[in-house]
Amino acid sequence: MNGLQRGAAAVVGAAESDLGHVADGFNVIDLMAQGIARAAEDAGLKIRDIDGLICATTQARTSGLSLSEYLGISPRFVDTTILGGSSFMFHVAHAVAALQLGLCEVAAIAYGSTQRSVGRRQASVREVNPYETPYRPFLPSTAYALAASRHMHEFGTTREQMAEVAVAARQWALLNPAAWEKKPLTIPEVLSARMVSYPFTVRDICLVTDGGGAIILTTPERAKDLKKPPAYVLGCGQAITHANISSMPDLTVSGALESGRQAFAMAGLKPSDIDVVELYDAFTINTILFLEDLGFCPKGEGGRFVEGGRIAPGGALPVNTNGGGLSYCHPGMYGLFLLIEAVRQLRGESAARQVPNAQTAVAHGNGGVLSSQSTIILGTAATV
Amino acid sequence: MAEAESPLAIYQAHLEKGELAYQWSPEAGRAVFYPRLVCPYSGSTVLEWRVASGLGTVYATTVTHPQQGGPYNVALIDCDEGFRLMSRVEEIAPMAVAIGMRVKFRVHPAEGDQPAYPVFVPVEGAR
Image (cartoon, rainbow over all chains, first blue to last red; front, side):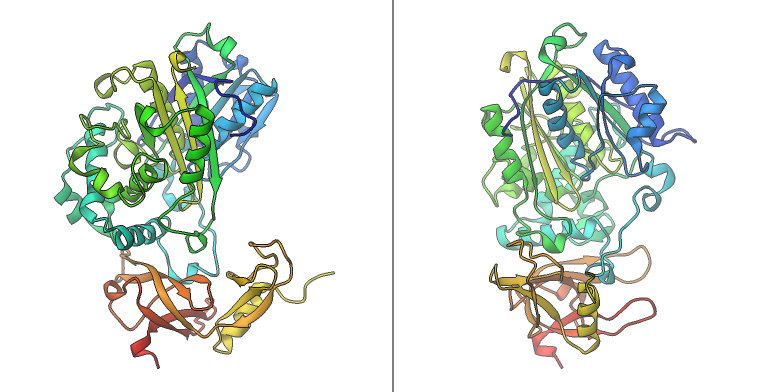
């Protein structure tokens, strides 16, 4: 992005809060604080070192206030931008700007959700839209299904190809002890699962879990003296194209085309330079769309690209190495977990699912109904 | 100075008369939908109301399977005047609704708290 300097900030701490189905009585601020405490420990920082506080949740009206009070801090820089699941990628760009300008020195980005415990309806209140609500769209599934229908029509993408995405995610999840899903999954099982919004069965759709976490960013100078190898922010990009699916200009092209272009330009890299790819897979079509729009394959080729285990463990391109929103966890706004996994891969901490010698990673966030797209490119010290 | 009527109220009043209304932006030279106060293509606040022919083409389609009750269609319709809206194609099986199908508007009448809204039927079966 124009104005942001490549490598002006680094992620130095990354941690999940409790995931899955959290203990009774936990609220979203508990989960954010737990994530920040764990991320600070991971970085070798104290909570009181944090002077930039950034957070988003659908379950607290003024989470920036609640989290500051809970942690006992009075941050110099605060941001509670909320644009759906990609919010945390937008936050990274804001953190880089704040660190570059000296508005703060240590910025924490936090998330929390108890949507599984309290129910989706309560966690995320549906807004009435007089131009859509009468048709009873099951949102967000209906919106993504409409996008999938168009992709199938224009490019011949098949349900089997979309099922490949779910199967690859599951194979990665089986290598991740923190993943919600523990059993193998096959293409026929995806296709024959309960239909939700054609062409999607329940296995084409992300999980509904609790969860949260945090990442901590600081300046490159300070990052050098901390506990873990820094993951430098090499590129940031963002695009908002619409809010409601009926206003999306072209259902086969997302704002990832623009956000990716910006992020790769800032990083001075191209898709073939990327070692690990983390894409916001709320639905199987997402992975296909974002592989195309970010330039990992040509437009329309995403379905064929993912065939034959290409993005699964052992495939040519490691995608969604934590198991993704489809099989690892999805508390409603999933973007932060893509960043956490990208950082771990660059540190070489991902154990059984580690991509050998990962030096560069893309974490691409999606929000709303393909509405907000934000791309972050991270790299090791060797890439700066 | 307050506006006399909201864009939604004007749109609904047209529907009550059996008309599908949209806006035309003279500055942008194109149709605007949903109705609003500012043209999203030009920034102009000059928007003219027009009544659509009611003819359109299915742009995207899905079938929603609720936990209770039967499956139903949700579609995006590209109207001939150059605007798109969410709607439903009726009178055929939800899975028979296909991209590219020509459709014609009709009013789904108000029921309880739900005001009238536009739905579509295949052109061949239009009454």
